[in-house]
Length: 156
Image 1 (cartoon, one colour):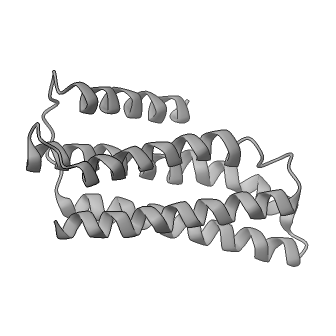
Image 2 (cartoon, rainbow, N blue to C red; image 1 turned 180 degrees about the vertical axis):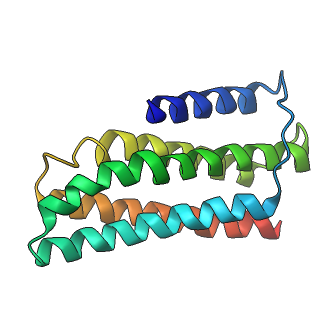
């Protein structure tokens, strides 16, 4: 249920971001956006690292029982809050003329959410450990790339 709510929030705010027809009134500071972004990235890195450690400690099955709970209740909402706060900050700062680099960061964050929902979530219980390692490595790479893009966008 929470995943459906997260997806619905993302859909509403991305449609609102793309159309600029209606503006929700909400106070979001840059500190909160950075907080959501950093914790999201930390949990992606940490959970990927923990998955590898659990495999070598023969606790992989137990860890994979914990991952869906982590994704649904912590990582998913952090991704949603990071996207929503980023959209609000972009609209607040730039009004209707959002620069191309900000637009690209928000799009990449949305694409990462789609990748995460399609590949990472669907392979949690059924995939081979090595396939999961490839998916987690790619997820970590995408998150790192997003982090660097967001740092660049804060400078401009």
